[in-house]
Length: 172
Image (cartoon, rainbow, N blue to C red):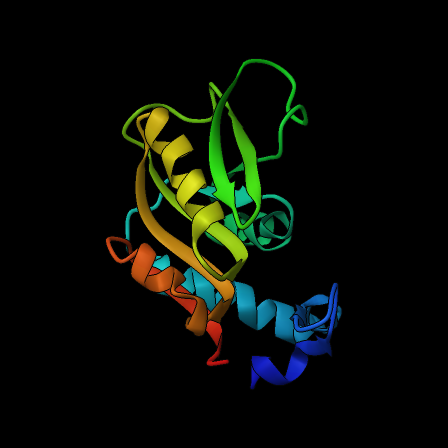
């Protein structure tokens, strides 16, 4: 199945010049969703992964069924003030300004091998922040899984030290 055909591209959304990759059209297709999750699981099945971490918010949509498929637990990385209890936080740069991500302080024990899941790899800034949170907890990032990769934005180069798996690539 060509998963790229299942993704709707919306020009000039949310603003002029942006070509938005809408995954809702893939998600509503049961076979496409199943293939997405199973392909990610197959790539990482023999890597000793012990926990799946999903990055807010579409990383939750893919990460939770992936954790189920791989018989693993699932941890959330969220925007500030969304998680109850004690959290660790990291600030990261955006194109204009900064943002924060948080993870529960007790999300997993030190030494845990983690797979980070998100829907889209663009510049890599958000995932880089997620990696820093995982490292603060003493976790080991064993891989990064994405449905979509925008190759022209350089995220893969920024995260070159990691096993990066993406299912659909856009060259421009």
